[in-house]
Image (cartoon, rainbow, N blue to C red):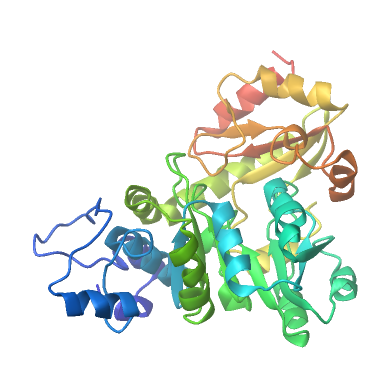
Length: 396
């Protein structure tokens, strides 16, 4: 199936077919091109490739057929014109900022983003003249107040990590357009199987392919999806020179993950809904955060913007860090790891792991308490997950 035909097919067809170009061997599964470089028919062809006059492979830092297949497939699934694959989700964010922003520019970011993203914005990019202001995700008046004449980017995760807050994409799009800002959305939690930010007005979508796009916790990677100019030239230009490159092997693994993405995201969502509903009725559980629950403040909004509610559930227990750690240490089936998006359910304590490098005040401001636990719900039998948590709560 050629890339030009991609938009004529449904999502599940794109997930298994988009971007593939068979070689003369007529393989059914996409090949892995484990080659650092590629040869040319002549010196003039080499010159044409390097100058950009002729498309084609040059060097796997920025042109590799397996990586290209992953990029084209993900772009088709997100509804974007093109994609740039990167070595990690964080390098996708870095490539976006370095490719599209200049010293003196200003970013407004939602405060409830991944802790390492906060550190990237506030402690690393700030050294190069990029300033960031953080505002609550759903306080749109605060977004408006934070925007300055030099603001060039609005950055957010929806749903957020780990509180699962949901941004109103219509309001955020209107705000970005009114102030001539790029709207950049991290779509890690939903993936294009559940949410299409570009169709809702975003300019750029960010992915940590490490999570649900892989789905089995095997490889690290990231991606930027958007238009041909900003992503295809400017973000790609940064990757070509700076080299935060996805390996061909990892791209092949992610291609296999994309093939089952829709099926897995439905299963994750169904299990998470059942587990969240069960958790909110358990003694010692103070609060459950999951967009699928009627009690979630953005439940109706999530229902409009997403086709399902995803696999991330967080909850607060009575007490503080000691009580949260006691529950985490008590699980026997669920894996204690900060990674998410795996077929296996994982559990972590955000205040001491994913957001552990933030200050105590920053965590308080962002609503990440010492008693908060995050679950990435897998596809095991829900009854077994409930049993594991029940004994971790100290009930036989």
